[in-house]
Image 1 (cartoon, one colour):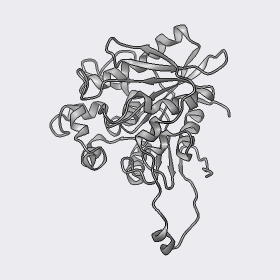
Image 2 (tube, helix red, strand yellow):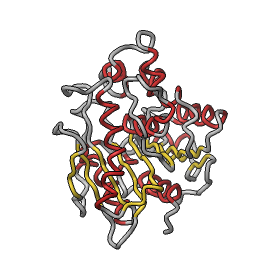
Image 3 (cartoon, rainbow, N blue to C red):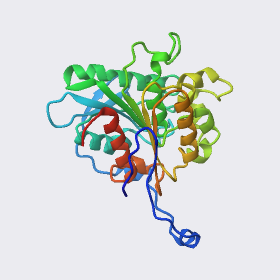
Image 4 (cartoon, one colour):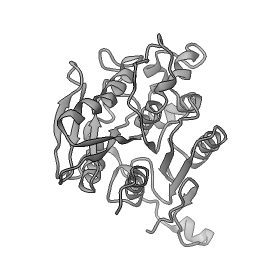
Length: 307
């Protein structure tokens, strides 16, 4: 499947037209599941490095071959902010593939809302401290911290997009950390960009009250928390962002992605949307799929890494 490239526009991979009868008779595609991604091989296990004292405050640093300095992709797994659904292993195949193409990857783990210290504000401050730890890593490794992209899947995409906006947080905000690491861009993979909107659909997608659980309350009860971390309420992000999702994604549906992209453009952001036909929410995490390749291409474009 060949994907047309249109920077900061809308991309839809082409597929042959079919009759209504053919569409009815065609078997439904077998979409990837989290376990499928977890079982993909990883050639570079990376270096496990702590960014905090909790057992879940760590990341996997994968360095490309060569001398560097290497651009960096901060990789953030999803899983509805809930530990049974995903962990750092789910993002390892994508992090491994990026490292093989000359991009250092920092695949971070963090506490979810069901962990002690997770939820509000711990889940968010974990990811923030993990991202800022790239500066510490650069003291011992050849990293180019002037070229850093955050890429996240699903709930991890919400966290990745939020990272770009931390400089606008006020002192005293529970998720404020001074001098946040500057980002070059953001790549959202099937991302939750509007936490209020997703809260109304979460039971159909996550199967649990994910949003109010990680936020410590419903949107109308703790609106200031949503204003602090929900990407649509943080616009403009202030950096270019690319949104990659399968056409059959039930979390980041084409309509929801388009609505967020439109709001972001109106706020002044440079935005690209890439929609992959016949693929779902988890396919984007596999480097073997067209969606996974689109994610990799997006990171390379934002970091200006040649093929």
